[in-house]
Length: 90
Image (cartoon, rainbow, N blue to C red; front, side, top):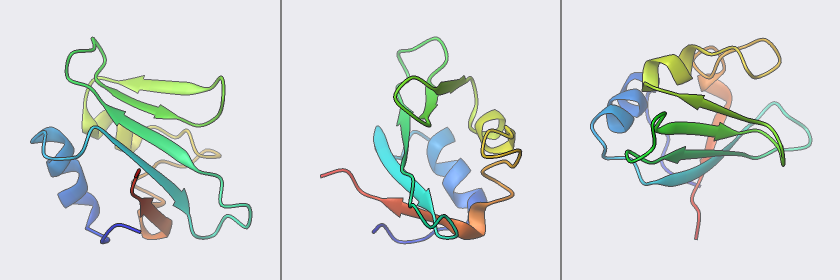
């Protein structure tokens, strides 16, 4: 598990290109611990991607857009931040 950071610091890390290219996360209130993949690739037209399943992914132009998108059962990452558990990719 990665060290928990504030939501605003997390967004700043993505914007400042300081976040690793890939990380995973899940929500602590999810009994199935469904894992989501976050990719940040600056060479892509929409450089931020969240993959929520085998065939479901969302692309974003900015970290703020990603954080505000209500793609988690009608809630955004920002709204659910207190339940986020970041998991490193080996």
